[in-house]
Length: 424
Image 1 (cartoon, one colour):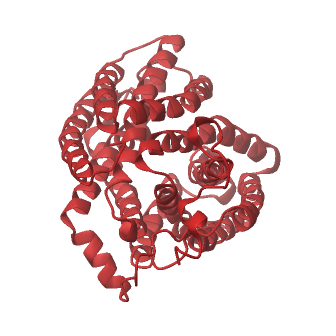
Image 2 (spheres, rainbow, N blue to C red):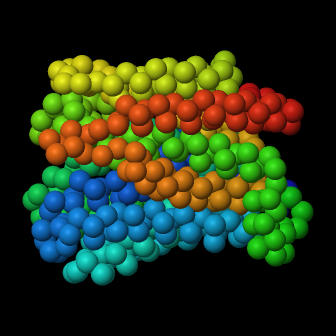
């Protein structure tokens, strides 16, 4: 199949490369993958801010609302495992279209949900399809871009997370206040439908992973992927990489309000400024990792992140400007370790296993994130006065996970170098 689609396999367009060493088609692919991730991330993140409106409208408890939030993560984790065995058997464009259409359908169901059981079902459907899109995107980018350029690619795609925080959530809250909590989901579905057309008419077939005959038994393919030592190290590193964010993030707003003394009404300002800075940090981190090496940038970013985590988790009553500054610095440090780690992780699997590896990796990320949040809930507690206690201890636990990740990523980096890939 590669001989029939040489340009498709490599994702390059005819003619001289555009600025930055990327062709026009490659720039289109990067922009498309980033935009798809933007829609998925807005859909994933929008439910939490809508909690107060949604619980009142549907007459449900905080516990029921928590299940609606977690339903997406758990179904996404299960979907990744179920998809892994089949992920390398198809043109990745067709696979992306199938799951993106399912994601749009799930989002529409959220937008018309008349009651809580229907909403819970809709979130499960959205998670089953939306939770796999990130892994397919990663596989496509790893197929089309060499490791030497992958840092910049991952850096640009990383801006989707920041943009969802800066643009998506405020817009979603505005629509929900004006037309009800259904409106943000219908908006996402509408925008995603337009994005689907870009996949259909703009993205070429991605078939570079076809090397000979694929493993006829998808379950055997899944088992071999999970059982391979080099891949197992990658999955374990992903679990530890996820730990930090999912331990600190769920309690971030409560810590800011009750411990740092930031009024709840001022929290959007903190997130907005942080997100705006993050949009520019991702590409810079990507360029640095391509120039100086993925692991050196990851190492530096991790050490700086640990310093900022200790500072942040030990803060008391703090002025708004200082909280914004610390949050910005923390996010800069986190981005400078996440971008190179994603690029390095994409170099672990062979091309024929890339789809399966990315699918399992996405499942590990979702499930370990849920476990990490649960463990964090066992460590911290709220005092009768409302203050969040033992958040400083949680910071040390996160730092311990980061130190372990440094060691694991060192061995992964050595393994990638032994493969002879330029740009490690």
